[in-house]
Length: 392
Image (cartoon, rainbow, N blue to C red):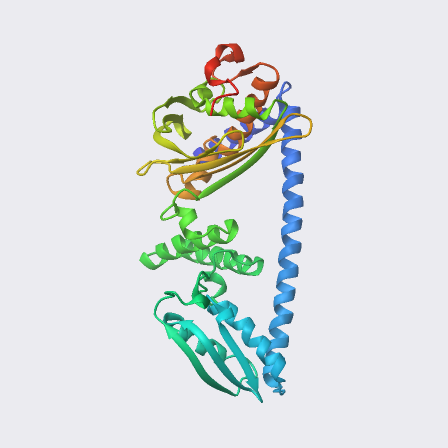
């Protein structure tokens, strides 16, 4: 058995040497790998600096906060009122509706507040350093109703534990990754159900810390269409009317987009898409236009029940030179969310690179009159009535 493993290893090393020493493409491959290595080193250096600064600031803040707890100093009323207002902004959806007055450390609270927030607000203000007493005269309302001070507002969940926040700080990501790796290593060194749970939990914690994506976006469960977001802008040397008309002709996309097999435009701003996925998979879905402002905005969203929910918006902006700046924001939710996206990239299907290549072909088609997708296509071969600048 050991000899077989040595043989497999020798074959792998030999194949690697041949791949990197190939007289035709080996030099380019080595240069390409070197560029990726330098880029990765710069990114790692920047990440280390960010984590070091964040950890230093948090350590100093914790030290001084602990030092202040040991030394009790009187707080003047103006400072105390400002501290309370700052705390209100974290736990109250309408902090401006509450009037705060301090006299010798005793607070007077007046105004309107939503009843579900009353208890949380009182508890949080009671923990503000310097508060000696609290006179609560707030008027709670079960719903905003027609009360002018309770209109609008944004719900505030209050102060949360660093590891329950949507976006983790650099320090939280560092300790999360280290803890996840330690938990995974312990799980692989043990046997049994507890060890299996430790392996899965540690791996999940490590991925969460390294990607800084919440659980919904990682798994795709409950993320809607926004598990993965892509952003790209490109300038095309063509009038904005022509670019918008071309983009509106979606049935022509398969001619220059290599991963799109078919787009069938239907009535009521609907279309049916057939797209190639990783590992030879095929996906189909219905989409509909959600917003169309001629020569300015085009937005779409997939229909309910789609295997790969997606949405996007394109902004068209004329440039002073007579060209068009095209800004595309695309969001989609592949099977298994961001984890599925990562596996798709390992299989050679990178949506970001596909979008970059498609936009370059789109630019070539409008500027040079031809592009190569599934085949070489020219502008004359596309539907002329769909490329008219008057299309809306």
